[in-house]
Image (cartoon, rainbow, N blue to C red; front, side):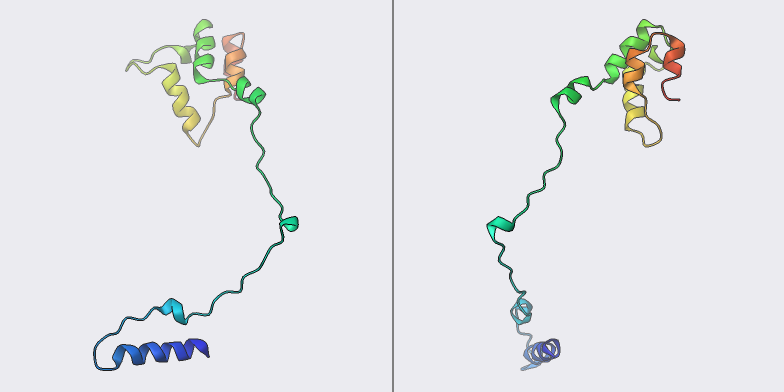
Length: 119
């Protein structure tokens, strides 16, 4: 019922003299009820944080590529157009198709072990 009355009022206000009149529609809308929350009933949920131990153990593309270069793995060599292993690694990690297991690649002892990292 309030919406109908507000609509009629807006129509009449806009069409009275033939000149449009500005009306704040928000003044016509019903005000939402407010709810008071007691401080004792407030629950704070915090997101788990990354510990520094995990952050320190994160392996970078540079570390993985350095190990692959040490093993003379083909993925660590520069490509004909001068693209580096790190650049390829960052692109792979950013893609939504596949990811390199950097921890495995950085710790691999042989070329074959590097090749087995994503299996």
